[in-house]
Amino acid sequence: MEEVLRETFQPLELIVLDVSLEHAGHPGITKDSKETHFRIKLISDQFRDQTTVEQHRKVYSVLGPEFKKGLHALEMDLSAPKGV
Image (cartoon, rainbow, N blue to C red; front, side, top):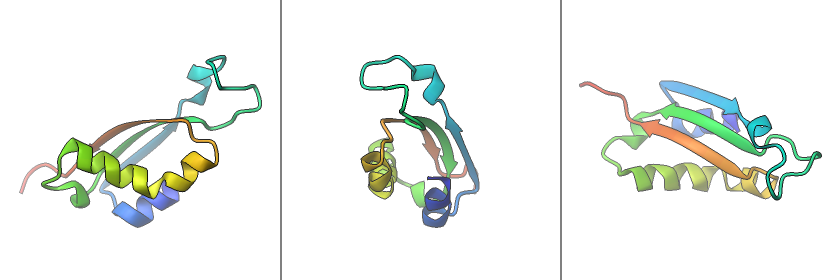
């Protein structure tokens, strides 16, 4: 996931945290489930002048294959660089 995000968005900052263990025992999450929940912070020029919904759609479109492989939830903090 991190590699795809880096290649696609060329971020100034990217943090990817696996928070799957926080959701162990939730419905639909089995003990065999791995890496199902992630939290990302992504700062990219590609988000400039875009609404939050547009930013989220871009990320979801890039990570579609990850959801098919078992990604269940993604918490996103997305933004364009601040300043000039």
